[in-house]
Image (cartoon, rainbow, N blue to C red; front, side, top):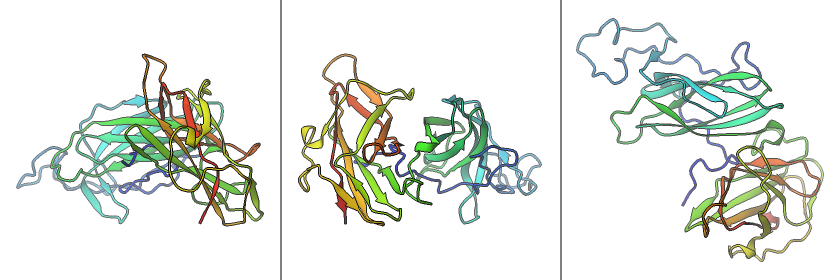
Length: 319
């Protein structure tokens, strides 16, 4: 079973969204959608009339959004939804009147730059996520996110909720694409799989630098909770001690990657609860490809139950 919105390793960007341009006066990470539909449609939720009215069907100046009724002010972990609009312009520049656009703001209360992954949901619409960052300390940035009508739904609600907000230090953000990090390597996680209480998430390593890169066996891991504190008391073990995953033998040995080569590791755990209380739920995992390497924080959404164990595979070359 595929895990939905589970990790930040492969981050879902929007199928329907405004263009992501920096907003004047906003700090780093500010995003702004371009003007949306100059709508001639009725207000959201109304039945189209034969004759246009000044308040509903009359043409609006280009770029003027069509507000919809909503309970604004939904807030969570530094993110706040500020307003909703009917309609959005998709990636091909086509007006989609059946879409829903939410404006939001992100405030960083940490002492250093943070990168946020925000997952939105609205009844009758497909969910969407937005990555915002880096956001400077004490800085508030603004953004917009668009959601399309769910297949088969003819009417949706007018309330958008924040399903989850995850924030990591921008210096530790994964880089699955774009310019090569200063370390010369990329480390990121995939979305993973979950079935019958067993969770598996892949960890990917790419030498995008100009020199060979050697790892000594397994990646080094730290489990981080929702409050960004290290979780103690969980044993990090070879993967075979948690579950047999098949494939080549899980043997830790030095591995050298030439520029352009890749390696694959992974984490595995069981969501088993055998006692009342004491279950470990930690969204973040700090990963070092080798001892002393710069850390990268991924978001596998660890639900370890009461097992107290997390398995990790050795790095192996990915063909």
